[in-house]
Image (cartoon, rainbow, N blue to C red; front, side):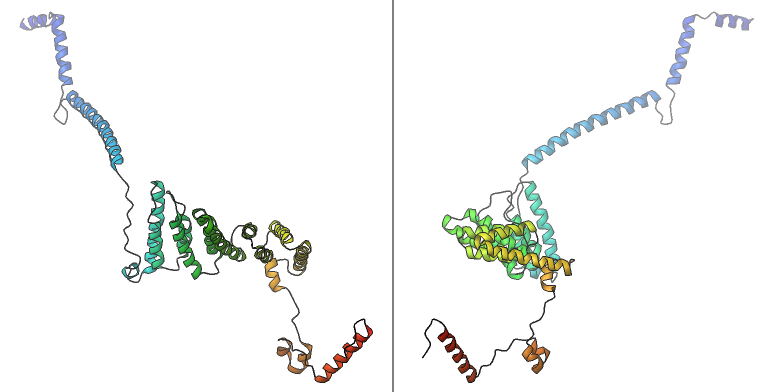
Length: 361
């Protein structure tokens, strides 16, 4: 009877009580603890909060870093400092490794020049670096050519002192390599085109003459643009040296390979000398070229002038008496005897008697 009564009570429970029971079950499931000992909902909320805090901190730190970097850059000032000791003591400090030290200073000089151009610096220590390099290795040829450009073309204004110092380095290089056409060309161009604008009018002709002298040597050595010979002729004519200009044209005709430049040189030669004189040069070059094409078409005109087959000057009189070595040497002057002189005088008197001139008594 009791069981029937209990069953009736359970079946008669109101709907509200059943809903509360379901809510309690759902709450227990949601509040089920995981391995960490915290409810899942609480743990998820903490993760989300931590991620949000991290994102906010990252954004704030990025903004603060950008502001700090901008402030740092605005307060920085670039200082051009040369850290090497004087060039006179560098060879002693390298302990014998002078070439290696010169190479290291050379690398540092290249980086220094690039940094100064980027930051628009004064490049005031470029001469000090080259002085150090040449003190360690006087045969460092690239340093002399490098200073010819970097010593003049810089981010700041250049004056006569800087050009004079470049000329000093180039003259030292030419003294070491007198047959280097590139160094001669750089020295002549620096004199004629870089130094002249900074000089007063009364000193310019001297600098131009010095520059043209070096440029003519460079042209004879085969260095420089193909129009260099024509430029040298024009400069020489402006200096009033017409004879030297004509001689330079004749020299360059022998070494010029470009046909157009050679033709222009022949036109200049005709103006300086005469048409017949220039035509003689043209015919000689054409004959030499024809002979080269017949015998040695695989060599240049300059090389063929040394390799062309020519007959040696043989003295036939000495060949039978002294042999070939003496016959190939200098020719002997004919020996005259007193009888030969008397016979020559008689011949002159006979010729004078037959002509209009009175005979010698």
